Every structure is written in C-alpha cells, then in structure tokens.
Length: 254
Image (cartoon, rainbow, N blue to C red; front, side, top):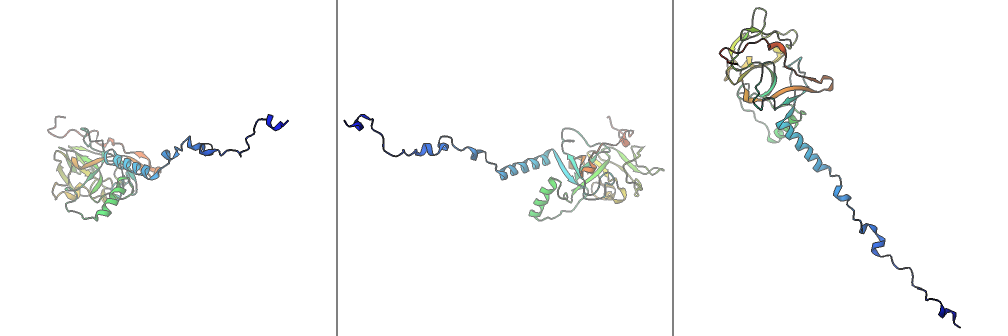
C-alpha cells in the first residue's frame, strides 16, 4: 500500500511573495505628514505682513533720534505711538506727546532719497529698528486751536490763555524759553515744543515761516503712549497735570 497516496498533498512551493500590500503597510495608510510640514518662509511673510499692518493702522514703534525731548525721552528709546488716539473724533490735548509729519510746517523743502534706501528705511522705521523719516518729529502739545500762548511771565513761565503753566517735565536747568513769543494758535493747528528747550527746534524756530510754526492737526501721526524699550525704561507717558487750570480759549463755547 502506498502510504504517500493516503496523505494530503503538501504544497511544495516556496512561501509565496507577500506582495505589495504586505511589503508596505503605508500603502493603506498614506503619509499625510507632508501636508503639515513646517514652512518657515510663508509663516515669516505672514508675520511680517501682520506687523506692518499693525504698525500702519494701530500702533507703531518710533525710535527717538535726538535729545529734544529729554528727560522724558532719551536717544534710542522706542515709544509706542497710538494711531487710533485721534482717529474717531478725538483731538490732541495740551500736554500730549505727539508724533507728526512736519512737512509744510517744520520742513518746507523737498528731500530726495534713493527709492530702495527709502523703502528699507521705511520698513525698519515701521518696527522701530531704524531712524524715522527726516520729516517726522516728536514734541509736546502746548497750545491747541484758539489758545493764546505767551512767553514768559515774571517767573519765567509760559502762559496759556493767561494762566501760568508750571512745566515739571522741562529738562532740569532749562528756561521755559529763551525766545519771547506771543501767538494765537489758529483753529485746527497745534503749538508744540520739546521738553529739552535749549536743544529743541520746535514751533518757536518757525515763527517767521509759513504757518507761523504751528502744526496742522491732520499731520499728527499719533500719540506717544508708552516707552517700550529699553526694558529698564518701561513706563506710560501720561498727560501731565500742568494744564489742568488752563481756561478755554477766548470765544470758545466749550
């Protein structure tokens, strides 16, 4: 009897090839990591665009380039300029520290700048890393439209609408002004001065020019609200109480 005939036939072929499905389970589970791969350049571009939009419409860092606002502001300070402060009906008030475009009031000549250099400087200035444009200034509002601002009384104080103002923010040792003046600020204009009076070129220096040294309100870029850099100088720039007793301008119904 052939015993082999009674046994089931064995498959003598080698172990079958596992095929593509068994060789790579990833065929059934596609690799989706590529969809979420970190792409630094688009992310950086979005961040830069966001910062520039924020700087253009809401708040802009402004690098202090000179000593004209000492001791309130030092050279190299970065202040945050609130561009919404006067956007919705608000007006600059006496004592505010403002940044403005001096074209037509402090600057009466056109300045030429290489377009590429201007673009790079503008981008740097927008984030507080470069000097602002030569036509941008930071000063303190002393008189608003309708105010009569005079210098000085017998104690060397500026008077606004006949009220002497004790300016505690003026640089130690400086006089309120070494130049006498008497001006009525036109409506829609501002009389501005630096806190370091002996180092500041401000409204006093442009009395004989077009506009009489006053700055149009619509040229104000924003109000400086905060010193953001260096960290050791973090502080808010609050409106001082010096002008609290100043009466309304003559003829005002406010």
